Length: 336
Image (cartoon, rainbow, N blue to C red; front, side):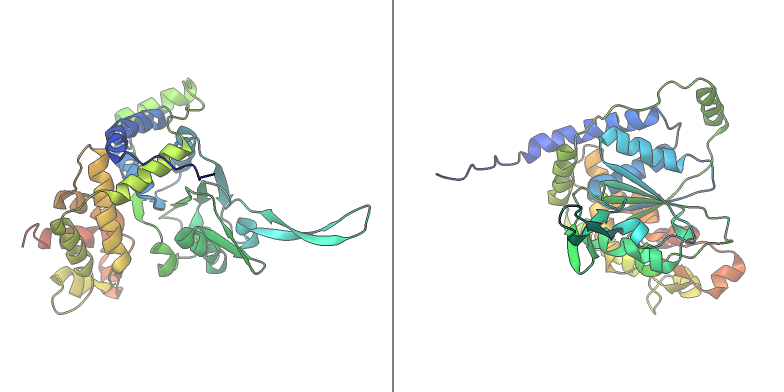
């Protein structure tokens, strides 16, 4: 008897599906989310790249609803953890409980999985819990696994952490460690809606049209498309520019003036990887087989904004990381 061979993956057919999948997903999410096109497009880049996303915005901007609508549109398992100061690591990963067999009296430990054992985990207000508990996400975000009780348990793919953070309320919050921030592929700022969009939000609240979007993509199809994005070709210009851009954020003799003045630590090599990967995903979602330098520049604010650690001078002058990243982009030519 011979093993049944798995049919070869048709990358051409998968690629032809991708732009249509993007349109259907955006339309499905749009049944619950008004506007926020840039936010949704950035999130889809992170999703099809297989990355994690951090959403930053004031309360009431539908960050939580966006993540939930995305899980529903994809038919993925969804879990939510409301991060609070008293949250323990085991509240996220799970814990061992002692079971006793009533007939034999035998006792044994049984692992009860925590909410992290899902496909899309919403880490709501992730900066409200101490670093010790935040660190419970590190292994899962990097390796897709959880180690507990001396054993390592793999998480079923796909696994994404979509976290939210309130940028204005600092009381009772804990800054995310740089190691954890670096695990997020993208940091996406969620802004206020326009007046027209806000009117529609109010009207939908009073007269809801849809309470739950129908899934438009199966889990297996999502995994196949995520694999395709990583196999797509990228020319050397895109790779070199991604590396140059990440290196330009690091203070040193050859750094842009804005970096030497305001930046304490720049982005690491993971930023170069995410810039190149995100450029592939952005191009593919728009029907382009090969990314361009413009794709790198378009996703750079989302990849670099949370990886640029500013110094005291920047804090004293009210300079924010997004403005620094924008000046770096303006100082770095697209060619040469």
